[in-house]
Length: 260
Image (cartoon, rainbow, N blue to C red):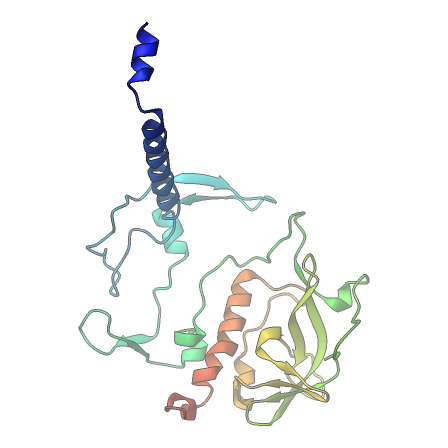
């Protein structure tokens, strides 16, 4: 019989493993090309298309409908890349050689470069799965209350150089995660309503104060503010966190020197 003769001389195990190899190679190709929907084609330090783009081609454009009525986004596309590009960076190249470091030409914390850099994310608050704003002040959440650990509200905010620069007035909570993301601070210790946010991971809550080591007293006036009193956008989050993080190097000229 034809079927018996064929399968009698055909290695089904070998066919199965080769089919798996082909499937796995196709899966790698698919995943890698889908991963290239943003940030490609690659560019060099001067913004020109890089000569080595890798073995995988850039995928065809695909349009994604965003949830909660926030429109759509097409990737890859020149419009999307332009929306996520910063062309006004205050940086100067130290050498013509490729890969040479850049140095700030202005105020790096205000310009958002180096450790203080930020990405041009959407200037809208992050939403949870139900379309509600995720990060909100605890004062507006009747179902939330402080239950353990040190309550920072009412404590003085002390900078890295030991100066009292403000007072904590509230905590901002990631509602679906039930986590404190920011502390709200009145920059003036006497209380004048000049509010700024402190990322919870970049401060230390002590028994009588909240210490922010990354910034010195003169840096607090430049902390990016939020447009709304009860919400923070994705762009504002990036700028605020970048500012505090940048202070670890740029808060003072002394921090630019080698540390032992």
